[in-house]
Length: 381
Image (tube, rainbow, N blue to C red; front, side, top):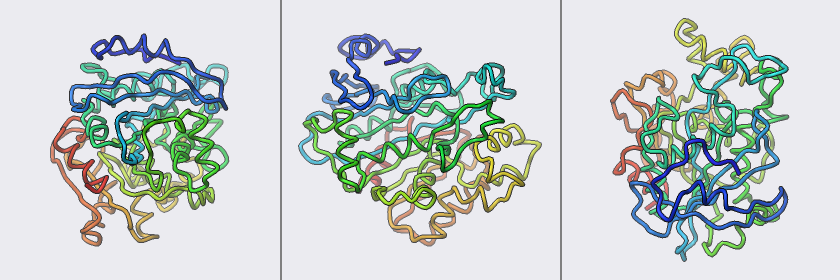
């Protein structure tokens, strides 16, 4: 198990890095056996919160390392815990001129490569509020208020780590990236997002196999597998639309019901970026790598299908949707969200929109009051 490069030093009961190193990890297909790790950041109130790291050997990052995900929950729960999947932000990067011999070498769109297992693990730790003072993604401020609010509320939360920089979109056979332009690397963000939903698959055999593989069948904590709740920070919010769209694209009839979505600082309609090549040209180059078919000729309707607005237009909104954004966010052009925000007038009892109005990107993970309010709405409390 890879220890994040910037391991926190302030956790209780010893160094988390040592705890990770002492874990025992089994090969793919076998139950993982290791001790849970105490979890505490500056905002947690409960003393029984634990974190468990997992390797996903079947899915490799572009650097050849296995992908990872984490589970955070309270050990003393007796009532079934709601399942939440939180998708971190910052999952966008590409190599400007990849070399087939060394496709990750050379300058990247981002200052530091985000196409490695190391970066993805660090990003989850930052999201969890376990790297105070560190700036894995300078565009965001992550103090861990949202993970604290989720854990204190009794949620069982999964934190997948996206090492593909693909806005949680790519998946072999269904939505593949541009293999040639990317220097012969696979991107698999949507596959990882989808795999997280298997814990509550409506196919009982599949759900049992997933939980057994990762030792979750032996948890003392009962899980409410009747639905899943989705939370997306920044670019992570796009995973929600991707998972809903996957039902159509891949015929995934075993997708569990989605009972509540929280978006924070997420662009919804990407095709608006192509209207201004001067300002967004570098971003659009990466989007063409991630969405090669949908951006061939830049048909707004093609790339726009991967949006919650498009999903709502095609189907009735039945689960709650909370959108937190800022009209002053330098990372999210207003027009990329305008269509989605307009639905609030149609679904006033299901949809809430909050414009924070400050020049910032991601808000719920550094405001404990707002985080708790969002979690209460998500879990129907």
